[in-house]
Image (tube, rainbow, N blue to C red; front, side, top):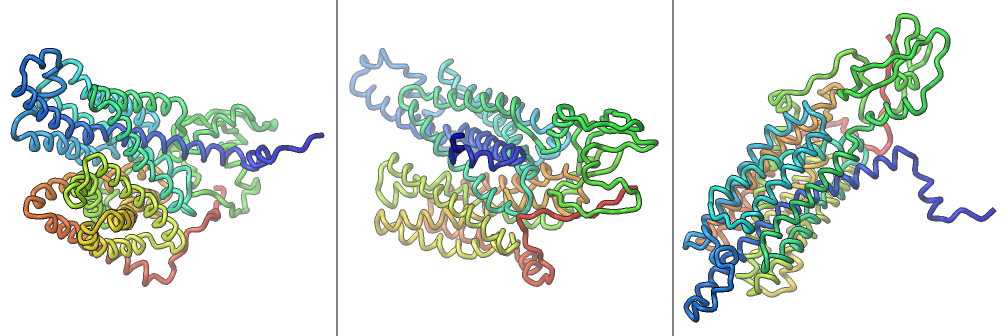
Length: 535
């Protein structure tokens, strides 16, 4: 007999649950990558529109006869962005999306708790694809109404709020608290991957046909929505009904196989049960509970406890989610942390152009190093918080280091390309580290807080509250930067440092609680022991 190849031996070492977990990790990563991929084109296209308009004015002065073959309305003097106030008009297009996203996020989580996440996310991705394509179709059909583009951005901002609460809920359901910081730190790199891919796709067509810069990403996210509908597994419990049907356990003479339509842990799935005497028992819990009515057993389980109730756990209310300890503090902290991150996202290329004296393309390429640093910072924050078991303290230390680093970046970036590259990586890690940790691991921790008593239906609402509050800062930061930059870039960096310090102050109570608590339990990769009794 030939020896088994080492690669096959490695693949066979993983059990079925591990393969499903890895599949869900990869699928949700790609799903949210497509969300960021579809948001990127507007930042690439808007500067090209003004450049073309300027070129048109020069050509019309030189020779008006040469313009007969140009698609003037669409490619050069694209109305209504050909006026002197084009910056304000393009800014209105940006902020219409950001404001709609911030407002819609608060509602999205509440709605998502009451609908199947797979269907809710599929709907959002299909609609996001539609509205992203509509923006590009404005080029194809010569649409020059500002109201049209603002409407498309507002609608797109609202439907894109379905993404983040849904994918965080899925990843939180599949991965326990043991290594959640590390896992979600790696998983959260989809933001930077999506930004990079979106820039490459939009940049490929921006000079020849900017409509395709929107249509292609729109088709990508719509196609990913179909994949989501076909393959997304919301919760590990959703697979048990399939396995129960495929491998039913044998029934004794006094056991009757029935179907339980109530579901388990808030999931309205079909579970097989058997009736022994006057008592119904799930096949799932039959493997855990002893047949002796007078005995109890401690069994290792994941972070989802079996709910032995005939009624389905109700979805948590908005005020109920706010009462979870830590939700308000982390939400307000993220407001200022995301303000800093999105200010860099919108203004960093222009700042590099002005201070390092590079052209727009080189400045854009250089600005991606901030995203690279953000990937490293997010993973590092997750590893440290897992090791220490202190999420708030980890965020606070990185915020404390970020403020002076921002000031250093404003000074060093004027001394050449080398120092600028180094400070971009450091700033990206310290700025995006807390942002990534709060929106992923912290949100998942709070959505499965012990005060919820096993109700797993709060995760989407908690995630939406935290990220929705942060999105308010994402809308305010670039706006303030635009106003302050006219007085000098130093004013912008002072604003960013003040925002970092405010974010730090909002975490002080939680940091003090973590450091003074005598019974802080470090998250472990092992399982949690829960005592269950038959009754």
